[in-house]
Length: 206
Image (tube, rainbow, N blue to C red; front, top):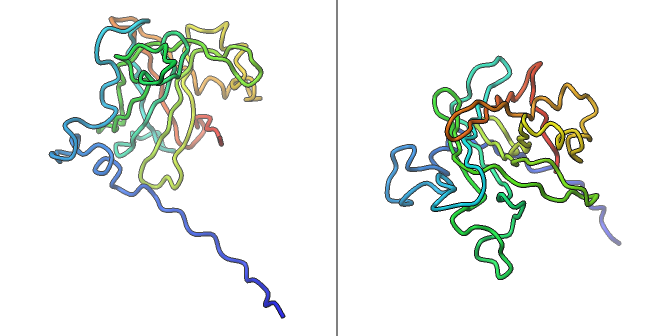
């Protein structure tokens, strides 16, 4: 005779704790000897195709206060819209560009990525998506890393037809993903990321 199988409780999630910077960006915390440089700190290592840009992201909590213990990773296509790794046999990426970055927030909750403006890649329906950068966000109190995107304000036509943006029914909420352009050399794109509150950024469950 078989005994009934008891249902098991879900294992509790673990927060990233106050150790995000220590574990993932030790040099930023003054801990040497782990890596020569924090992984992801530099995305451009030589001549690259495309427009160089500076992407400034600021993390804010529900009250609008800067979140200084957060960390963001970014993933993006190159200027030609390719995600293929530079070491792959069929690579058409520029080897000097990694397509991936990781930075900790400073005391003002700010991270500045020096990168290139991504090209357009095909979406699930085959149509080209608007240029965008994918984000993964962790911080103390966040049990599971948050995922979202950054789009560009000067790509309005492409944004209007983007597969993902059009999944957001409230058009006003789409604005939480669109970085404004500020002139300079290189061009600077700025976006505030609100984790909670009235201006909460749209996050995705992939």
